[in-house]
Length: 430
Image (cartoon, rainbow, N blue to C red; front, side, top):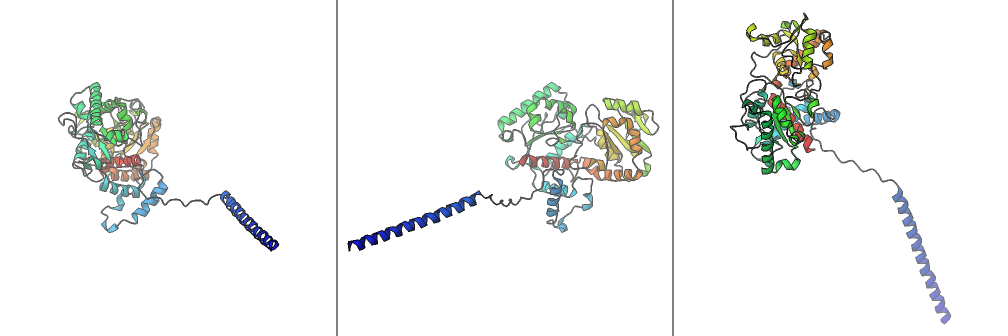
């Protein structure tokens, strides 16, 4: 009996040991399997679905931008589209994207204008809307009467610092005092409102077209470096940053004569320039070509005593109007050439042309380096009649972009500047 009981216990012990051994083997196999599996490289994760959005610049990542534009355009109800597609030609770097971004800007863009400052001095009220610095005054007036203005800063995409250096200059303020006024005004805005400090001024902008006004703001370094500068002297060698700042076109309005166009048969003179020799390139231009029989080059401005509007009428009779940089890189002569239908010849280095990331300037202008001045005549003569007709035709198409109006009109100079600011807002946002 005792022997049988011992045998039963031994049998149970062996069974228990077997079970433990079996469990251990299964555990070991399982552990080994999962260990080896963990050593395998993980399967690649599926990429997140990209959020389609209009790109901040018409010239950035063009292939993808065009895919987005094509996809968005298919969703547009063409029956409700009041824009003529013929207007959006290859004078633009990316016509479809420009059209779509412009519509988005019209729907959404909001700008807050700081209300501080005595409007009888330098704030919010522009000087008269005439002369070669009129662009500054027009912008001040246009922004106030446009749909983009908001009285609610929390809704604003950008903030406008409405201090007019043009008006200061008109009151005889010295350069040194202008810098002090700008500095004190900005300090007061930063102290009173929280908006500058949120981005260190990256979503703020100011506008100045006067040469002295540009110098005055340069005396306030943290304003120039942080805020968006909308200026008429967009030269790379004086601190202009193309992806941050905006080139403001210098437009001398009102124009003395109507716009030129569809008049190529009247343009018998090859090239024309008349002006002060207030830069190195102008001195060279006058010295090399002033006695040429095919280029009408004067080494001084045309006196009014020679006749009524003689200077402006020369634009009507000329194929190519030479636009060399003056004391600053900019020149109102460019907008004059465009208005009068004379193909502008840009003769200037380090120049970010107005609306350069929207418009393809080589489709309606001749863009040269200053060193090309010695071959100027041959370069112009090498342009065939067919090429000139195309340049002139495209020039007429862009005239509306270099015209200020009050109130502003769709696609005019004001809306082009606002579009540039809208692009900058997207850069800041992303």
